[in-house]
Length: 259
Ligand code: DAK
Image: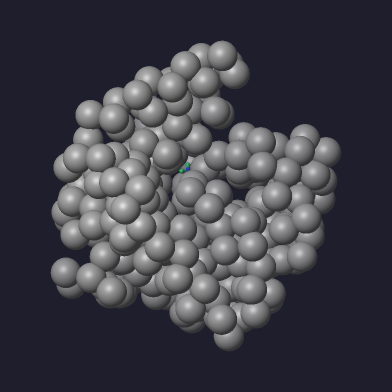
């Protein structure tokens, strides 16, 4: 896979790591980068060996937002008629395998929104999150005003979107935006440990867990619980359920086949 604005690698046969790679622009997200990211995500999602993906950036920036220079001269007609960058930004939402964001440095604007589109965020202690679009005369455009209030409450989301201030890693963890904060030096080690653990389980179960948690944001509690119940029932039709439970009963490690 030949990319110019991202790099990819496989860890432990089962985890794909995608690194955003526009360091001089603090990984500002342009159309070409989002095309490459979408392509890599689709490729790894379709790879039967891969059980989990990680998206990361540099120590200084996960991503400092959508590329402001590229957007600066667009008119309403340009962005509305072309459905400005919805096409490649939405790809991550169609990925069925778990995706972890490993965030160090700035995750601002579209960078914060990209991290929130991942299934969970592990943050380095130098991470800083924000939706500063208000400072450049616009508002978040990739779900920031919708995912932030779900993640951190209306009050904090309003504070972030209206003042454009940044939130440090400790505040992000307190607010529930990130699942854990780790020292910068340990970010990849801790993220890979989590990703390898996820990838060691049955892909059928991890995909079902992801689908079911995501349903919580789209349905009533009773509909969501019913959705979960049916997926839970369905997993009893899999070889991996028999293997996982037999392994537990017989005190041996499970060997999942994704069947
Ligand atoms: N775009 C383009 N270039 C950027 C950039 C960005 N978002 N952020 C930083 N850079 C560039 C800087 O211009 C600078 O380039 P040179 O001058 O060296 O050529 C280089 O990266 C280093 O930046 P600084 O010199 O500014 O570095 P500092 O450490 O002093 O400051 C900073 C770091 C992150 C605080 C600062 O760079 C900054 O405030 N950056 C802008 C952050 C921002 O406003 N982000 C939000 C952008 S709007 C949508 C999807 C997404 C979006 C909209 C719609 N759809 C699907 C429809 C998203 C919109 C946004 O994200």
